[in-house]
Image (cartoon, rainbow, N blue to C red; front, side, top):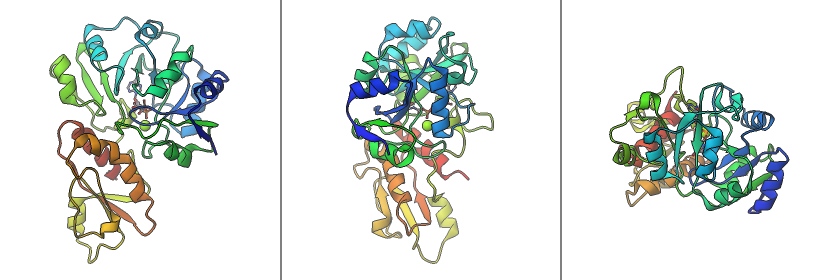
Length: 319
Ligand code: TXA
Ligand code: MG
């Protein structure tokens, strides 16, 4: 079991020794290590059981560290960074040598993000290196939004979990690339497409699954709990004789076909920010109800953060 606490000096000490520490961010908890040390980065892949073709995000504290890590940044990228950093935006930039191959899976771009969470920022500000940090969950499982989620899943693999409370956004960062100077959203996330378009105009959204994903968060089946997950449409075509064993995850209204104790709602006020924050916790809670064999999910309005929520729900229910 890992120790859970809010001791930044202890987190720094462990990281300086080349160990991994779980850190809070506003999106989800990350499994962090020194991004410039290939041996440390290898430990991250190992702890998560993550395939090495799935590159990591590098977290920085301030813009003056950027020059060390990447080639000069385009005007468009700069606009987005100044609009949304610190915050749940990750940009793909041309990397420099200092970034080990393992971090980028050999790609010539590196994913960079400046998180907003106060504890993460304090920690980054006292480190002399940036932190590589994927979400702190075993590969393919639901991302953690509390220190306890990390403990439950990776507690045996790490010494320390820096506890920053419940993540305020609850969905991973939005990933944007700038190939041919065209801003392209590769992963829907904590900053909506609408908000991005207000800053840089129309963008391409290419967050679909494929057999050769550019971002494995794009893998069709991802974010999956261990129970069977089906959509409400699939449930209706199944038309089971009774709903015992079926749990329900809805947006704002209960569905009276299911036992009320086996239902979670993302936001009774129809607030998409609240829904995002509750998404992974609710999926996890349903996944842990012993008598359920199947979780039935319903989608939320497909706009703003709702698009990212629906993206995660689709992946969680993908076969
Ligand atoms: O909100 C977040 O982004 C969280 C917190 C901890 O910062 N991190 C996170 O990391 O979600 P992770 O590893 O679970 O997801 C990172 C995604 C992966 O799907 C990876 O494929 C993609 O970023 N990625 C990283 N570098 C890339 C690159 N150079 N090109 C394309 N995709 C990249
Ligand atoms: Mg992840």
